[in-house]
Each structure stands twice: as structure tokens, then as C-alpha cells.
Length: 83
Image (cartoon, rainbow, N blue to C red; front, side, top):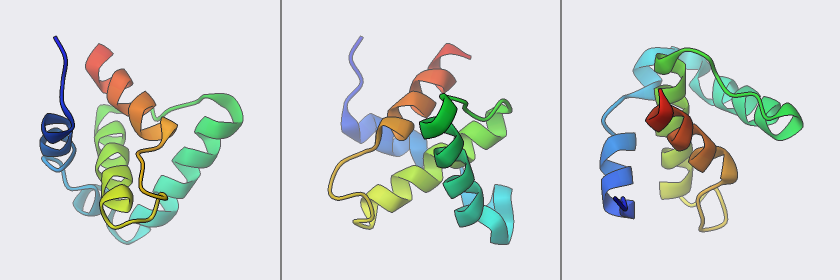
């Protein structure tokens, strides 16, 4: 079954990463992305995965990722789907 961008957006926005990570939301996302691009590591906890998905979507939605979703975003989405 194929999932469209609209469904991905709805799912990503259904968990508030700011509430989960608080004031450290942006630094936590940056750290998660750095680890992913250096070693392929993703957060282990489902809540952290959901927060990362939300924050990554927000960055994309606000034009912070050059108009396309990152490889990190799709890796997090796939990890959530396999969990």
C-alpha cells in the first residue's frame, strides 16, 4: 500500500515534538540528524522517533530543507513503520 505525502504529513503532525523535547527540541533534532548522517543511527525510543519526525516535518514545512524532505525524515518514517 502506498502512502501519500498528505498522509505522511498528517501522521508527522499528530505528535508534538516541542511538547516531548521542550526547549531542547531543535538541538535534539540537530543531534539526531548528525548521528544519522555520521553513522546511520536513529533514536531508539518511539517517542523520540515521533518527535524527530515531527520536527523534521516542521523544518521542511517552513522551508528549512531546500524544498524537499530529507533522507533522515524518510529513515525515521520507515523505522516507525517497522516498529
